[in-house]
Image (cartoon, rainbow, N blue to C red; front, side):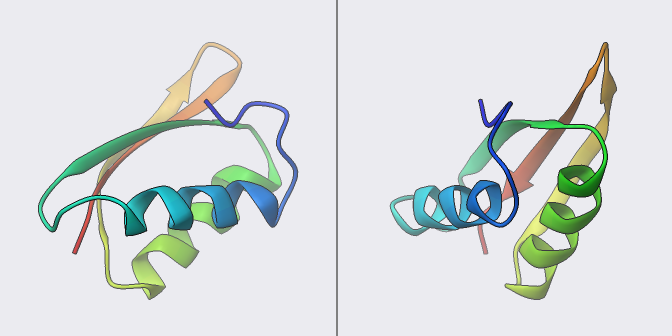
Length: 68
């Protein structure tokens, strides 16, 4: 849950969590709408991970990531 976490710290926290996971594991994160929903998915894909799903849930943005 990264709600209320500002850019770029939401991406940094996501990246650090992914580093502790095995390849093929999935991570679900919640982000605020706006800048985080645009920047984090792009950065994650640039790192080589796969975004399995993403979408708006109520007033938040939910993303499912598969670690490369």
